[in-house]
Length: 149
Image (cartoon, rainbow, N blue to C red; front, top):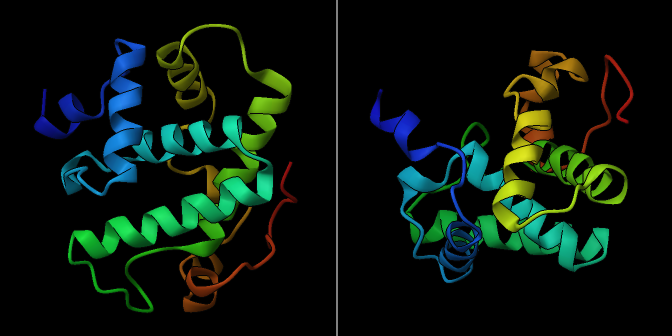
């Protein structure tokens, strides 16, 4: 098993989720632990505790703060990506509204990742060229392949 796989394993306890969200919030989360699973789990936390637009704003601000804490200088091809963030926040909000099962935070986060954690999910709705464009990174662009759910 590679180190990356070991860091991005399913959550074993609700306490792991709580520690992740706390580390994200106070920017102590190491860069190597800011995985796709971690992104979705923090999004789930915000979408569960806040209205959709406020959850998006908290996620956006938190990613910017964490990137800055990691010394990441945003460029037109690196750093925060508005369209991808909005797409996943929309998917997560829908999951919370329509699909969220009972269970502790680990169960919820693992179920979200199982259903919507595919890294190619945005490419079902966007062509690669549009999704990776500076315009899509800097601001919201509507999908050019399939409408969002």
